[in-house]
Length: 75
Image (tube, rainbow, N blue to C red):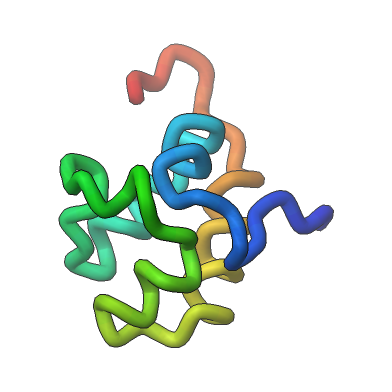
């Protein structure tokens, strides 16, 4: 699997480019999808703010970004 997402990437840009990562954000109890901080923080900064290991968050986001949605599935 090619690494698409890094800890230095802007969180809001990641969420926009890889919509599948939203479920990782939700699963970790992060309210980042509607948070103004998402526009200013990197993935790493956001992980640290929420007490999550950055490398784990990046890995989970990359897995989610690589998943294919079933045909006809809604976002």
